[in-house]
Image (cartoon, rainbow, N blue to C red; front, side):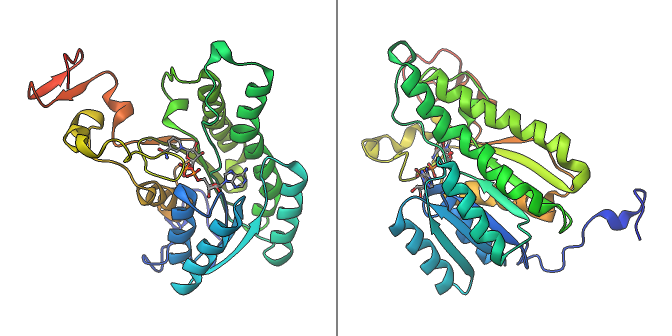
Length: 286
Ligand SMILES: NC(=O)c1ccc[n+]([C@@H]2O[C@H](COP(=O)([O-])OP(=O)(O)OC[C@H]3O[C@@H](n4cnc5c(N)ncnc54)[C@H](O)[C@@H]3O)[C@@H](O)[C@H]2O)c1
């Protein structure tokens, strides 16, 4: 029996190569892109992964890759924007794995991009459905199952655009900010049930949704201006942070939103100018 004063409250990590051994993880949009990397990395770390995926080919490919690597996964083809489909998905998962201890809400999309002045109720609703509604629906469907098994970890993938000013589509930015706020608030309310909730705000990550390569083949030298770390991001960069937040490595971390952005948010309005050899806040040309 431990007390709150007991250092044994820090969960032991028995196998650093299998940080999610014995756990069931649910990943939405877990077939490709950031979600695909999360599914594959979590399975490599011993989790059984239940994937919710719209695209049947991506779903099959993820399960085949995980199985070939010796891991365990099952895919469910569904649209997480559909509340009934989410209920059926949760029922199917919980029938076989009554204690889900990791949930990654990853689905989201800035498309179709509609500028606010040209937008209306239809495009606002579409942004809500694609970026916020399912975060509530899927979280609600699995939350209760986390408690009896001693808790769990929820990781919400939103966007750096929810954490800074985003001129492209303020409605998309607002939905992502809402996911970040939901993350913080749910963390505070569920902490005493052993459930941690954290968020990831990606930027500059090459995926099927966001092609950062096409058309930029001749501009590789400008990465030092575009991101403080000086390179493009990959789904694996996001998945590693998700693994930290999902596992006991972060057992004392909850309610936080981590920009996984190569430093773009931290950089604010500062740009490295290769021509001037220094950081400038008013680039005359890169
Ligand atoms: N890539 C980036 O640089 C970037 C930047 C900011 C935010 N994000 C956010 O990260 C998350 C993942 O982005 P990504 O770039 O990997 O996206 P992606 O479109 O490349 O991959 C999303 C995956 O989810 C699946 N999916 C899409 N809609 C679905 C639905 N309704 N139901 C079930 N599955 C669905 C897709 O088939 C795909 O496998 C999103 O929330 C996105 O907004 C990404």
